[in-house]
Amino acid sequence: MLKKMKNTSLCFSILSFTILSTKFVYANPLVEPSDWQEFVTTNSCVNCNLSEAPFANGHQNADLAGANLSGSSFISGNDYSGSNFLGANLTKADLEDSDLSSSNLENTQFQLAILDNVNLTNTNIQGTNFSEASLNGANFLGATGLTDEQICSETGATDNTILPDGIIGCQNVLKS
Image 1 (cartoon, rainbow, N blue to C red):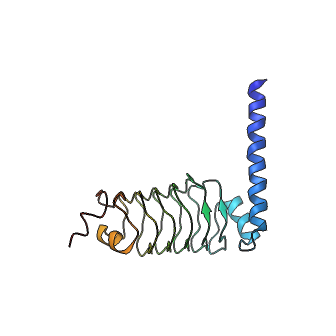
Image 2: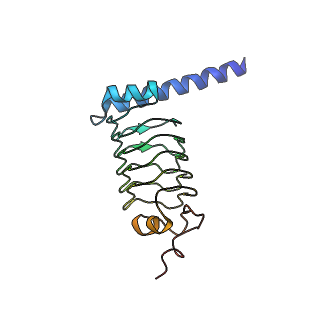
Image 3: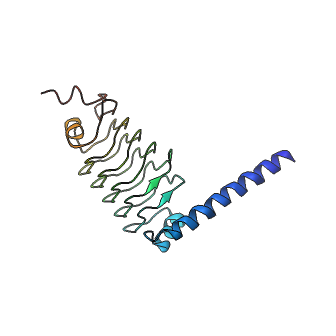
């Protein structure tokens, strides 16, 4: 009986959270409701407008190629591993503590984004713009498309950022 009550309580909590986050998205004039509904039901929303959307749940293998996700908030700890963000706009997005491992981030815009402690292992970052992004503790191990030198000179990488070649921090990469 107690187990059944716990399961019912958990289901109610998940349902309540889903309803609240859906209402918030629909109340946000920048998010196109039909785009949000498409993403929630299909895990895909190519070239859509989800700017400033609150992504409260992870979506592994999502297809958000070309999507406008500027200013969006990916609630801490979300799993978007294996996802396709090819050409997406994530300017000023907050992805702190998210998992983007093995994702396609080619030509993605991350200007002024918060990418602290983000897992970027084995990602394709060819042509990706990280200018003025916060990358404190980000893990680029095995990422392809940008060199350690490019990441250190063109981004907000810090002394505890793990670079594609496994070097920790930029202090030894950018020696004059």
